[in-house]
Image (cartoon, rainbow, N blue to C red):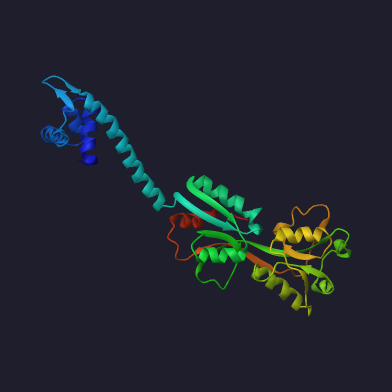
Length: 292
């Protein structure tokens, strides 16, 4: 018995007419009748009572009809599902992201994927940039929105946005009223920044910005999280250079000021080049529709 035999049986059970059932299955009546007889012989059960005028389901036949319909529906669903998975329209996608992308980029990506592929289960994980690199390498994340890293040939990347650094200070700080701030103004400031081991792209950008003006930055505090950096600035414990994307809601005690010739950096969607997850390819195709 296979699904083909089940379809023969269902056709007859639903029409209760050998000629009509055979036509539905694109067969002539004699071979169709032989198939029904073979099914009953294989099962050792009479499924139909028939005479020259009528075909009627037996009690066993009625029960078998319900089971066959369930099996065929499940089989058809499995065939649809495997095609959806292969097309990236069903399955699971583990997407990592840094907090720099949490406010503007990630919500748009989630909406886009949810609308286009509602059967893809999206698992979101907010991580530090250094953790994201490792998790992608270990295939514990399928893709991520993070800072661009030109030294990562093992990753496929697509530019999503370009961000820039801004200075944040306590509202009582002398630089709070400056129109623009250059590196020279930071010479005697206590800088608060994440360590290079956590956010190498940002730390390198800050160091290069100061070095271009001959300034050696004084990193007084080095918390790992940008939210912690913002809170420390709010307490007047130093100043910080943070991505502009994080400056929209700093609170009343913090002021952000633009930098002269601010360092810029890329925010990218990336995934291992060796990824076999079709949902990753679908995501990369979908992001072409977005502008940030």
